[in-house]
Amino acid sequence: MSAFSMAALVPALGWALLNFVWQGLLIGLLAGAALALSDKAKPRVRYAICAWALLACLALPLAQLAWLLGAPPAMPPMPEQQPDWLQALAAHSPALVVAWSFGVSLMALRLAAGLAWVSVLRRRHTPAPAAWQLRLDALALSLGVRGRVMLGLLPDLNSPITVGCLRPLVLLPAGLLSGMPPHLLEALLAHELAHVRRWDYLANLLQSLVESLLFFHPVVWCLSSQMRDAREEIADELAAQALGDPRRMAMALHQLSLQQDGRPAPRLAMAAGGGKLLRRLERLLAPPAQAGSWKMALPALALASASLWTQAHNSAANADAATAKAAMAPATMPSAAQLLQLPLNARHALILDDSSGQVLLAKDAFAVVPIASITKLMTAMVVLDAQPDLQATLRIAAADVSPGVGSAARLKPGAQMSRLSALELILIPSDNRAAAALARNYSGGTPAFVRAMQAKAQSLGLSQTAFIDPAGVAPGNVSTAAEVAKIAAAAARYPEIARISSERSSQVPVDGRARAVRNTNQLVGADVWDIQLSKTGYTREAGSCVTMRLKAGGKQFTLVLLDADDVARRQLDVGHIRARLDRPPSS
Image 1 (cartoon, helix red, strand yellow):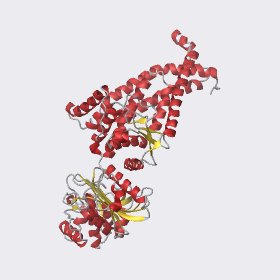
Image 2 (spheres, rainbow, N blue to C red):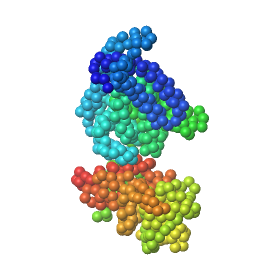
Image 3 (cartoon, rainbow, N blue to C red):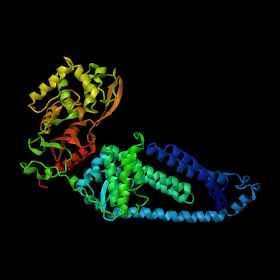
């Protein structure tokens, strides 16, 4: 390999840059064709196309530079037999390299200024209120974000942004706390957490480096812009999935657009207000995979048009005061005043101090409502009361499969497992077919099993509780928050139920092979959470439900939340409650 020298570098670099002009155009044409074919595909596909195209844009000049520098002396970078116009270009290589170096220097200064700006934001921000930090923590759990993400406030921001990679920080404009409905602000926070989960800040930084090196080629800027738009759409998609409500994400983007003053977010930051508003709303409100005709896009077009019209006329957005709901509790419980001020989303709730038996919070706790898969705690108790052979083999039958009812453990008819494994499957991933199989294999079959469930409820003094199936999928499985607390207390006296339901994950033998399952309560096994029993539930009629027994502040409590809007809101409620229980009584 030839010795490295500046005399060899300058012409080699010049040729690499010149050749990238046509190479970049070719990459742009190929990427453009791929993007046109995938216009209706998921944004992840378009993001991958742009990312690979940008990588090719960087790799081709580097590869040619390495080849030219490594060429033997007998192979000059520009042979004499080249046309005159190429030789003329080669003669201007030094000037070309100098101009490129000057441009790269300016782009590097621009990048350094962005990094310095991020550093200033870290120093200037003030911590967000504890209640909002709790909401962010709960959302992070629901999105599967590892590590702590801090939330800060700044008065002069135009949009929520995320900065940092190893120590991510979500920054909110201070005015949004009072100027935007809380449920919409949570949607924006979920969007920012989606960026954290995907390490988008690091990807954006690497993307900016490619822009700095290849600043002279319009294809690079076009690909980079498309990549940033797709990145925002992916974050929208992940946030909508975590919230379980794409419409709420769309409404949050619309509301944010009304409150922005037109200043763009810095390129290094991940901002919820980035990307193309119209396209993002279309994908949230009328996903291409579900759109049967142009009429499906009308709601998105109307919403986006209203947003752009309002911005053009500088109309002020009025915050929706009706969404600032407080979780009111009975006035007969003054000792729990601080707890009762928590903004619980669940429509029915109960918190019980297990050591004293004192009710700390009761929110419509005596209303009879569906309890969904919390039913499976009673199912497990009835199974164990019969003292069956837990190692006996059960088989999933066609009768265990109900139309429209899924299997969290992916059990198919004919699948075999032990009775103990079936108990694990109903208490950890909350499998419905395993519950049906347990009931069917009870002495007397499923009808006798349901009668035993009702008898068990009566023996526990549950006058408002009724069961009609062992899985909880039917809306006729009902109880009250107060009586669910009694069910949880009774279930906790069974060591097998307490142990299984408090496992974060497990390898359950099915058909002779270990099947990995995870607890439906993401807080189980999480850091600083000491949960001794847990069961979640969800149906359209019941909403999102959970009951658990946990330790906090040195005491043990039973917690029941019924009919929350979705898992994220339910997790937020639990976070609020846990933070309050951890405080000393006088605080």
